[in-house]
Image (cartoon, rainbow, N blue to C red):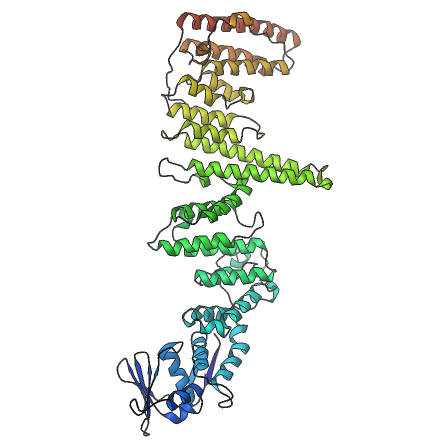
Length: 582
């Protein structure tokens, strides 16, 4: 820390209790200066020789108050006045980053200018600030912190703006030029610990990281921090991702419980202001802040009841990067349900809107119309988000209070997103059916309509055929999909029974849940169909024989199912403990 010593005489200021100050000298005091609750018994000559303001006050005194003057509004209070008084006496005074701002403001208040006496306090402090304090990284931060209690004087004297400019200039410097000490808690590299097996014993100087300054600024209160970050951004020499790292570090330090997805502490107003400020400081560039951090920030903003405008902007930013999120990130609590589905629905809607706007912009730009890489990237993002939503649906399906409409709406939002399979969606649907056994036939039909049986994997098909929670229509569709896949592979497959027979079944028959006998029959049929796919090394005659055999089996299975429905009518659903596995 930089410091400056003024004066050479011994410090003869004495205290009598908490509120009395005097100068221990043989010469009787002739003026009493009241600063707040503190009375100082001093001498006019040294004070008036350097302070024009004290000259005016003494000149305005009358016979009633005699030699007593009152100073109530001096910045820095009694401590700052004492520094100025000691300077007037020529006593030794040490100025540093902790007291120099208060001394400068007090000297301004007392009008200790060069016009009063050469080498006065204002002049000397300005030299110290320019030559030492503002050239020091940590001293600039310290003095900035002290200015908060010195407003508006510190603002009018430009102490705050000069501190901010000093901090911003240093944060924007080339890291090769950073030589002063700073706080940085990153883990040391193996070579720094001497544990690298390839280390040759020569310790090379480590490069200064780009975000070397972020932790030191965490010492600032949120209002000063906002101004510091804003000043750094205006310089235009720090990348947006480093600004993002700074905001993350500050939030983790200043918002208790943030890393755990909660907000601790009773000062809700303070924490709300902090969260809203961080949201407002987020860089505009996509990817400058991780999606996971923004989702935790959104969770905090909801708990703290931050302004809706800020929350909407945060959701828009998250929507742009939703493909980076995890299912755990989306598990935001709600007062009525285990998870806030409305928020996630809003995030997915923001993602869809962002992708649509990006696609429109791509089409407008004629130079990019033939470039397929942006479209491929967009399709990849959609596939990731679709998988994310499927995983989220599987989690929230366990909530018995989750309305079917919210489940279906969220699933339908990503229905047009390309994805390799519908196994994840099937797992979510099966979980919902399991946790909501009282669903009506129409509700089961509605939720199962979300799934495309043709896009289930072989393992998912095996599970679906055995699943007693699925309507018969869905189970048959799974079996039919296996037939189509067999046909696509070049193996002859039998046609399904004639439509005239199928018309004897009512809509309720197809939407009913299959019986155990139906399940057993369908399971056997699926196994028969899969034989054709596993026998790729057989000769053609064996494949044809197997195909003819399957034709007979399939016809019998469908005939049996239809006859069972005609004979038994509507069949009630039964719940089992099994669940889908993808």
